[in-house]
Amino acid sequence: MAAEVERRIDAGTYPAGERLPGLVALSTEFGVAVSTIQKALAHLKTQGVVRVELGLGTWPVPPADRG
Image 1 (cartoon, rainbow, N blue to C red):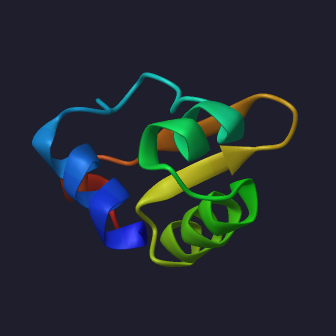
Image 2: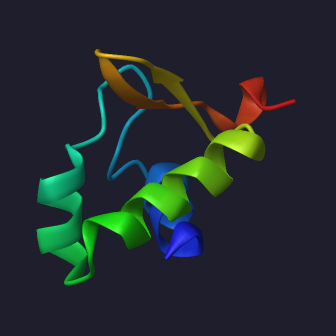
């Protein structure tokens, strides 16, 4: 799941500077539970692929800016 979200970020489906869809929208899009999306996004955060701002959302980090 995390790999597919990362692939979509890298492909520009979820462009940098634009907030990712919400958890419910992503779970519907991928046909998985919200908890699965939460785990995938948590993994991507630790990898530097996304940044999370509590109460505001999750944003993709451009590949060039990843640590």
